[in-house]
Amino acid sequence: MAEMQNFNTSKAPRMSQAFPQAVIAEKFIFVSGTPGYDLNTGKVISDDFEEQTRQSFQNIKIILEEAGSSMDKVVKTTIFMVTGNDFSVINKIYGEFFPENPPARSTPQVMPFPLGILISVEYRAGRMTPSPLQGRPHRSLLPCRSGRLRAGPLYHGNERRLR
Image (cartoon, rainbow, N blue to C red; front, side):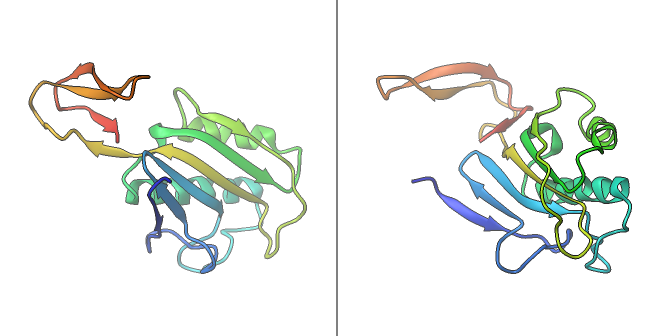
């Protein structure tokens, strides 16, 4: 079974005390559904879909960075939205946060959320850690089908890699 750890940061709003902002499991970070809440008020940033969407993405960016990852390590997003005709807004903001190599995405329309929430976004991202041999050339060890380890690509220690 994968080693799992709940993760929360006070630098981003928390939707509920019933579940964490994210779960770290081995090489990945799974971010819970995150609405466009304002950290200072604890409420949605406004009743405008675009503002809520941008704030939701910003909140997730903070959660990922605090958990040791970044937006460029996101592999999948699921965007739950109340109205089904706001794809142009989502595409615009998606492009702002993922200017190159955007991750896979699903965008289901859902029944209305409580408290004026128009959007909630969850992310799956890789976890970043510094190389264990910082500054020295080394090969990573990768498992092969037999269960033994084989030498992987040569790293020079300045790269950040998925752990």
